[in-house]
Length: 443
Image 1 (cartoon, helix red, strand yellow):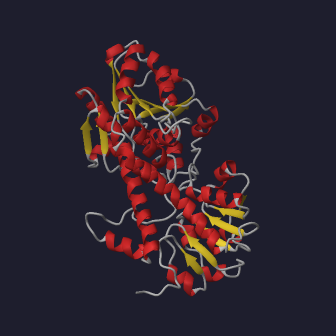
Image 2 (spheres, helix red, strand yellow):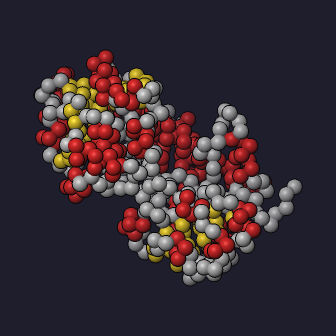
Image 3 (cartoon, helix red, strand yellow):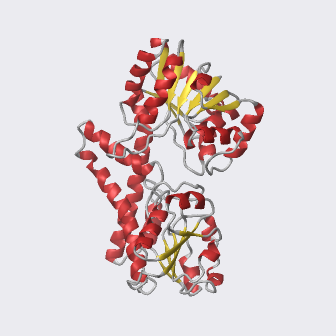
């Protein structure tokens, strides 16, 4: 099929490359000339395993093109809208300006039957408004259909999640739209991926609700961690016990510095804002507490660092291992690791940051911090080492060898993924929120 992808950021670039890999003729449209130029050479403007290979294959085969001109999308049968919907600068609601801009440029080109498919995460009710808007402007009028097909990508696993997703969701208003989407995703559906057909509103809610559920789970386990500290219990043991319960499971049941990135924080806030607009703000108030608990983890981690430095932060050498909001990504948007590093810097500490992939973006976001590509040299003369992003590189650090580098063997495991027995046996004072102190007796 001939397909256009409007917006070639994280979602759009990945979606375009994967559609081309499925055999479709794809053109990606973006207003950023530098991004388009880079993608046209087969290189993604962000870190994502496997994506450069797909981009290169698609460009070389001629199945994947990129352009800044919307006219190049005019011959497509299906148009995927993949623009960003960040949090508004003036409220918790989503900023849909990029969505309306994309539709305003696309609609005048739709002079016959075609399908516009939203993939961006939007407040419920946006799809119906977008349908009416496009039909009002498009020369094809009611021959233009609109569907919603939410994405469920995980940064660091986006290619896998696109080609082998856990489920497909089609919010459609006709059998024709459903059949067209099934043709687009034929290789994926043939592989046995479940496909749910539903209405526009339910499809819109699917991604946001999934992120709210995940955010709630993470904040809840962080609440458990704080209760464990107050009750002299150990959250590591507690989550192990909970994980054996089949109703709960162990995935995303690890406490730490909290969630971040470009999705969970803004989607949770946008869901609350839309719920309030719909008159269900009172029960949705729980989402405000989820956000508060999440942000509280950052403050608590800073407090723990200050405590371990005996209150003397000014001039202290602190090493933060991690800048990306999660391993496998170079995304530093709302990164807990980078936020904590910045807070400690503002308190007067000398903070050096190391990360396998995100240093360029981190330097741009927080130029006042110091950076080192090598995690070991970054720990030179450190009085406190803080592991705040769950990169396997950090998990494999030899705590014995690191003793010769640091000024004091003190560390905070902000992801609860270091081996506490191994580090403590090497002579380290290792701490983590919610974990029993090594100096506290059992029982």
